[in-house]
Image (cartoon, rainbow over the protein chains, first blue to last red):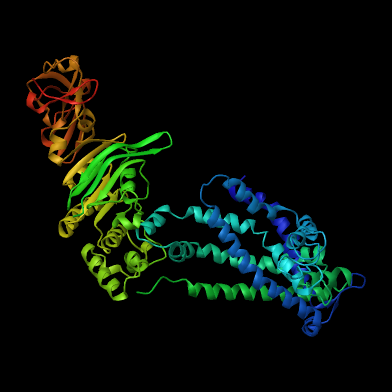
Amino acid sequence: MSERRQVVLMLTPYLFGLVALVAAPALVTFGLAFTEYDLIRPPELNGFDNFRELLDDEIFGIALKNSLVFAAIAVPLRLVGALGLALLLHRRITGVGAYRSSAALPTVIPDIAYGLVWLWLFNPLYGPINVLLRWQGDSSTTTAWGVQPPQWLTHPNDARAAIIIMSLFTIGEGFVILLVTRQGLPSELYELAALEDATAWGVFRRITLPLMAPILLLLLARDTIYSLQWTFVPALVVTEGGPPEFSTTYVPLFVYRNAFEFLRYGYAAAATLLMFALTALIVWLQWRIVRRWRKGFAI
Amino acid sequence: MSRIALEGVQKRFGETTALDGVDLEARDGELLVVVGPSGCGKSTLLRCVAGLEAVDEGAIRIGDRDVTQLRPAARNISMVFQSYALFPHLTVRENIAFGLVVREEPKQVVRERVAEASELVGVVDFLERRPYQLSGGERQRVALARALVRRPDAFLLDEPLSNLDAGTRVQMRTELRRLHREIGSTMVHVTHDQVEALTLGDRIAVLDAGRVRQVGTPDEVHGRPNDRFVAGFLGSPAMNFFGREAARRFYEIPKGTVLGVRPEHVRIGTHGLRTRVDLVEVAGSDAYVHLDRGLVARVPAHLRPDEGANVGAAFDRGAAHLFDEATGERREWQ
């Protein structure tokens, strides 16, 4: 068998999966976006009606805004968290393996289980977070500093914050990538900086950050894409899109509800397509902005 | 005054002793070359002087300051690394300026010093390039300029020529020598290359297993090695050694000693010990003649014998060295 045939043969399972699970559904979604389809009657072409309706749909507007606000807050925090942990744990110190594992571990827990754990953690009455916050409080409903603890699952902003907090612990992949990136930086550069009296901040700003920038940029793009989709399970399991007024309804949940609960597949496909275009636009803008920023110092 | 002195310096890594009571001085304005085989502790020695490694015992002085407990930056020395350690994201100009910029020197001063240093090592033409656009030799020049720019008390050079190809290495060696003469600062240069050590150093310190075996001018360490290790390490090809029995073919030597003779002192001709030529290596103008019984001679290439020829081998007693068989220390002829 020729080498070429071997390569093709070995790629076949992967290509099959890619076509069947990614390419074909994507194409179908693209097509469905221009139809009305409810699983019962055959799809009916309706041009740009779905998109027009989406633009007027108040709930889609809320979901889009929620998604963008979530990404705008969660992505920088997640990156800073992963970078901070990587810089903290790249050295050989006692027990570093355990620390690294615990930083990476939450990421490998199945989303549903992760959501259920947080549902318990966030419980306003007996959840450990609020029990801790109420510790030494004046009454059973105030914290030690005299305010009411957050109503994680019932107050709109507290619920949004809860979803962001949940996302901050699934940074394992970014952490591992940044950890090896940092370990790969030549130690001589840091020794030189020590000889030249660079401060810790100077070393970070002038050496570590610029040298890790290409990877950080990649992670920024990747995490933006990821964050715009990640909200689905927590919103479904922990907050169920509420509290009222759709305060934690994000685009993925909006799509899910329209497709699988309201049987509006065409409409859901249009929302998906719009989100896809928006994601691509954001990532493209990020590349453009950050590329311009990568420079040395002027003398 | 910017002499560098190590006094009884001990450095251990776990069970391994990297430096075992090192006493060594680089005099003010001197280029001291520390030479030794891989793992002899020479890089550790340099890193201890720089403050990148803490010493376990002993003291390090630069000028008249005891710097043993000072952090690297407070020692006011510059270091050049084998890997050059240039910042890939900065231009040559920014790389050279790094030490001044992080110390927040005024921009005018930075510009002047960078211009001066880049002039001195000849990198003026590529100040706006980035390290990846430079050859190995050019990178090493940039690293030297960066070391020069801060006008430190002393320079530490950690195998700066090892990553260069042979031609560039010889050229850079000469330039380093010239540079040292121009700036007149104290330099400690670490290398495993004995030719580099012999050609470059004002004085040479030979290090083995964390101990200084001999310090002296190139002539002293090459011509009058303190012990068998130094004798065998310096010189190419290596010195011939004979035990008492084997040496008897040439000269009677005292009990418990070893005789050593450099290949360039072995004469090949019609006189002396009759032996057969096993192998001849020609290295340009010289030829290394491997004789039976493990004797090597270095002769001008045009006078080399043919392989398989029967020749006589001899050397003067005065050119031979005696070493103690047990301790390796130098012994004098009686």
